[in-house]
Image 1 (tube, one colour):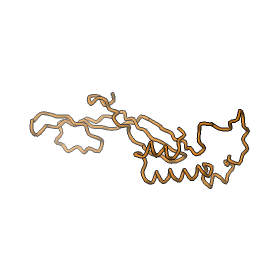
Image 2: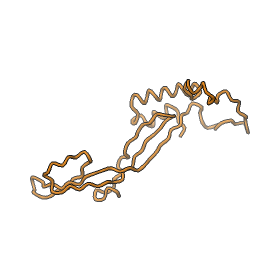
Image 3: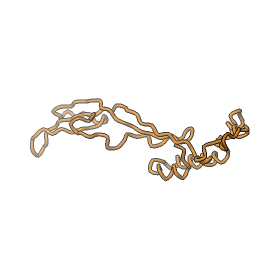
Image 4: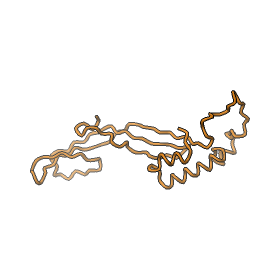
Length: 150
């Protein structure tokens, strides 16, 4: 996507930290200076001074502002270790099963402990060249408690 700084903030403000918001504002300054930081601007990558030929009246996308920043959204699958713990309910005396994450420490009073690897879908965003944000597991991805991979 090509978005302005304000569009990025409007869409992703809940995924940006204050430090990342400041980086975004710095990008806005870079865009107004030709979208290159001073080190790059001094090299041969300074395309702002190259003459472009105009074909059919357009030398760029007419629907895109020159102040927009490229934003990428990526999703990928990973694995997450979870445990199925069976314990006796102290009130009823019946066995109950709970799902725990990999930080759970076995205490020895469990009837059964079974560890499995399940698929977990993650997402993340990149704005510009190096502003990464919103890198986290996707919410509400588990449909069935009986089969976490479903």
